[in-house]
Every structure is written in C-alpha cells, then in structure tokens.
Length: 594
Image 1 (cartoon, rainbow, N blue to C red):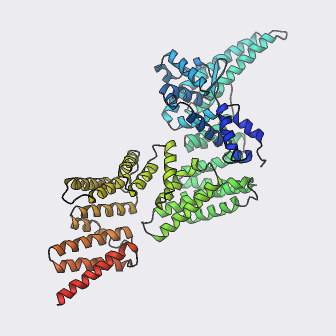
Image 2 (image 1 turned 90 degrees about the horizontal axis):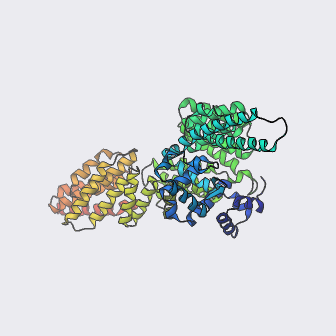
Image 3 (image 1 turned 90 degrees about the vertical axis):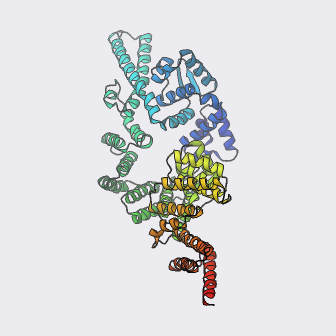
C-alpha cells in the first residue's frame, strides 16, 4: 500500500477554504500519511464536513427550506438548475423568491457551489447531507422519486432532440453543429446518471431500463446502496447477481453477495453464504482478505447458533489481522474481528445474571478488545461506539459518560445511549438528569428505562419521612413502572421482580415482597438472593415489634439457609446481614432457654 503524500492532502481539501483550514490544523499534530490513513478518505471528508457545518450558522441550516435544498442536492448528486430542483414536490410549499434567497444565502456560506446556471454541493457537504437524509427514508423517497421521473423524462426529450440533430448533420465539418451535439449529449448524460440511480433506488427499474443511456456500473453502486443505506439485503443480492453476471471476477461484490445471504439469516441462505465464502477463500491472496472472510464465516456461524465456532473464526481472523509487518500494511487497520469477538462476549455476558464472575470476565474481555480496536482506528466511534459504550455501562465505567454525550450529538434518538446516560446520572443521584434521559430512552423504545424510573422513584421515597404522603405516592409510582415493564430476557424478569420486591418492602407489604420472589428459590442470582434475604429480614423485624419470637426466629433461620445454600457467606453484599441474623438467632435462643 503506497504512503499518502502532501499532494494527496491538497487533493483532499479540494479548494474548499474551510476544509483547508481544518486540515491545516490537523497537520499540526499528525503527518499527512496519518491524516489519510486514520480513517480513509470518505471518513476524513465526513469529519471535515462536520467541522464546516459547526462553523456555520446552525439556525440558518436548521430552517426547513435550507435543509430541504441541501437534501435535494445531496440526493440528486449531480449539478442541477433551479428549474430542475423545482421538480421536487416538497419545494412547492415555498415561494420562488424564498427559494432563490435561500440558494443565495447557502452559496454565500460556501455550502452550495455554482457553475453558471447549475448548482451542486462540494463533496464534503454532499457526503454529510447524504448521510443525514438517509436516516429518514420517507424524506429520501419524497425527494428521489419525483426528481427521478422528471430526470428520466428530460433525458428522453433531450435524446429525441439529439436524434433530430443527427438527421440535420451538415455534409461538411461545422463547429457550431458539433457544439450543439456536445451540449445536448452532456445534458442527456447529466439527467440520465441521476435518473438511473434514483429510479432503481426507489423501485422503478422498468423506467430505468427505458433510459436512452444504460449505466452498467450503476448495478455495482446499487449493491452498496441497498446493502449499506437501505439494509435491504434481498434487493442488494439481486443487483449483486446481475453485476456478477457481467463481472464474475469482482471479488468485492462476491463478498457482498455472501454478506447478503448471511444477513437474510435463514438456514438455507446461511449455508449458501458459507459455501460462497469457501470459494472466495481460494481467491484471498492477502491477509486482510483472509481476515475479512474469517469474519464473515464467524458471523455465519454465530447467526446459525454455533457461538463456539464463531469465536474460533474471529480468533483466526485476528491472527491474520495481526500478521501485517508495519503500520502502513493493509492488514494493520482491519479490526472487525476484534469488534466481532467483543460483541460476542458482550452478548454472552448480558445473558448472565449480575454479580456472576463469568459475566464480569466476559465484559472485561469485550472492553479490552473494543479498546484495542479503537486504538487502531480513529473512525472506530463512527461504527462501533454503541457496543463499546454498552460494555462500559455493564461495568459501570465512568469512561462511558463523555462517549455517550458525544454519540448523542449525532444520534439523539438512540434508546440504548439515552438509557445508559440515565443510569449513570441515577447512580450519581442526579435524579433530574436521570429522569430526563430515562424518559427519552422510554420514548425511543428502551424497555429497561422503566426500571430506571422505578429505581429513581424508590430512592427518592426512602430518603423522605415515613409519614410523608409524597413518599407513598413515589412508591406507588415506582411499583407502577415495574408492573409496566415487559422483560425480554429471563434475567431481566428477575431483576425487575427484585426491584419490585424492595419497593413492596418499603411500602410495608413484606409478605407480598417475599411471595413475589418465591419462584426463584433455586436461582443462583446474587441480586435476587439478596432481595429474598432482605424480605425475610423485614419479616423478622415485624415479628420483633410484635414480640413474636418464634416467627422472628423462623424468618432469620430462613435467611441464613438461603445464604448458606448458595454459599454467599463471604460475599460482601451478604456479610453484614448474615452476621446480624446469626447474632439475633443466638440472642433469641439464649432468651428462650433461660
């Protein structure tokens, strides 16, 4: 792999003033080679775009009309005229003067570039707003569909004009005629390029096939579009097969074909993916290619339920990833096997109950793998920040807080990240912020946010006087949150029941608290065991107040039996209640024998 030079960096800036400033600042701390190598050109461009957007007037950019114009130019991807842009139905809500003023403002802000009557986005800005609009499929379709049909009609009309021109071709060479033909040909190409891509991405392949120019290379582009942007693996597979009929030696698209089979996930397609990967292995001439195939085989095994084989393939892929001799080798920056293995360990850990030693070890292993990958790839956060943060949250690691806050700037509706932030603030007893983010998480679909809200209400209640009516209301609210919670995994149900049990105890409903956890008599879950013990301790306290020594003694003996049955005497959470119960039993027995 050749090393990038300062010339590559100048090309990257592309004459854009803000981009040049951003890159110049980065070059104060790293070399040109590292600037290009740290993320690959596209990701560097995206970072430059974000810096440019941040440096502009966000109030202007967030105005609906300004955003719509930027999204239109990003979706079309080719230079267009004002008349072209007006083909998008959404723009008809605005007056022509407002649209022209918005275009002028965006041009002054260096976001739109002009070439006579045509306007387009610099590649930095186009990349940013392309990714932005893809997050809203309805908006993408609302722009792409009318423009695609408009561009198709224009290309057909212009092709008729071109054919008429050819009938009028002079016998002698004529510069004016040649210029006319060239202009019309260029216009056909401009409309047909965007029409072909947009018609196919909106499901109008029949119309695309009627274009006067057919772009075979579009098939390859559509594989990436439907796989990466739309996540429509069946459609991506359709275009991959069509392209491979034309170019059977295209290794990258063959790999994506296997990925499509893998992502469809049923047993037959997983088998096809595995067979195809075996064939590709013969063509894998570099260590990175082998590492990529092993990662795919690991995912196929994982989706097929064979986690042991998945782990073995990830580990073998890591061996190939680590075999590059130097920093600039192809193999150096391929970290997907580390991430895949980390995700596997994290998922296995999340199936285990809290305080399980194996769970802690799996989480530690996952974090180590994530952090190793993150150290190699500066674009790690763009793709893998969420599972890394999840692993940190499982460990209650404070490193998670700034990472979540940064991630939420780019994806504020992420349910898991909002939930993680709520949990951090809850444990810090910053309940106002915890409630805010828990409500967001609940709204965006994270069911465990209800348990966070229940824990907050419980914590606030027990800090109030027992006679306070607000305390009763808080406990009732906490109970309501728990009962609304619908568990996905068995461990989630146990955790929810344990939380509800302590809420019932705090509300004075000790017998209901004990009965709730009776179904877990054989479950070796320290969190549930602790709450079971606390239930019997509360029953013993009630018996003591009623001077019922036999009931008190029976409750304390049950508590001791639970701890000894599951060998928790040395567990820090149980030492105090075990010691206290033992002393109370001895005191009661001494009294009864005297």
